[in-house]
Length: 425
Image (tube, rainbow, N blue to C red; front, side, top):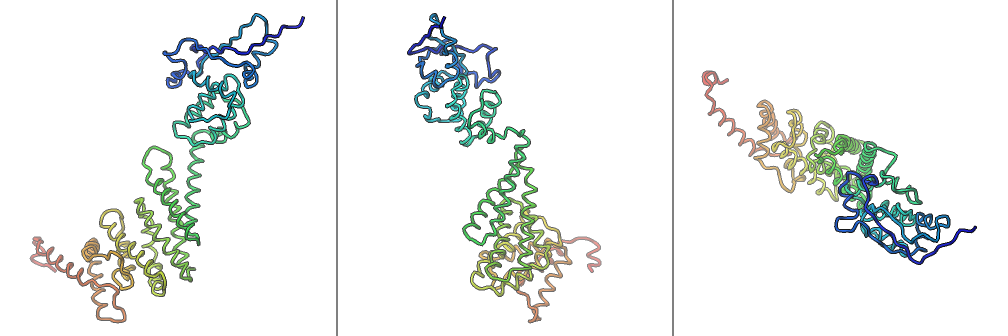
């Protein structure tokens, strides 16, 4: 005998509170409160159109199929509420307009819980596409990962996009390692772009690198980004060495020389801004060839000559000298002597006046940080050069020398050591 067919125009969906054994999110208070609240009755009824339910939901299609039908059946279906009632209403409304706006990651996840429960494939696919395409906050990423791990997200056409975004084939440590690799690659590319022949590209790359480098080197929290700091510093020092070699070995054209020497100043400024200029300064000061080479090349420059000269003068004079005295750079005696001896030509020469000249007081304080023997050698060499036009110094230490002599006298007057009084020499 053929089974009777039972059809109705409307059905009632009855939402009930979950029991502890049916709780998919045990222990998560934030998610539990999304289910039927204390202000909602134990059962909530939602009216729906049967034809739409069968068309859109595989779950309701199975429930309403012929093998489930009997003349005694009521047009009621019970669902355990896994989220707020409003998301059930929204899901059923989307049977008429599936591509309605989704306003947030959190709302999307709650909607997907309903779509998964009733096997509404179209909304599942739309929701997954949304999650895969919008940026996540740290909290939202945790929500998405938790939902994925719950098993409620079954396979749709777009699930693979979300899986790739979540990197589900990697654990947390592997994902962190990939992220650090991406950051390092970005630093490397932007540093490479900082040598571009195109001014616009060069400036943009420098801007990107500066922001990223400062963030990496300045990180002080518990995050793994601190592991990238040594590699980032090595990347910069390696590029600096290559740039200095390029200046020494190749830069015959004025434009290229200006670009390469300007890059050194930019690197120094970037590292100094991140309080990481120590290594760069050591490399420059230990290079015995770069100072006399630049002195010779700068003398031959035309065009933008003053700009690059002032940049180097500012870097050497107004920054390195000051940073040594202010406790931001820590140089050995040999390195401080190299700074003075190799770069003294840039101190006060007419062609190399910086915007803010090195004051006599600052230079005096710098020299006083050297042993007495080195102090005497500096001033003796300068005094000797005054009588030799062929080797006359490019710098004037008259004021500094006077301050030095007064200081020695002052120190001698303060000495009360008996052996000095009896035999000062």
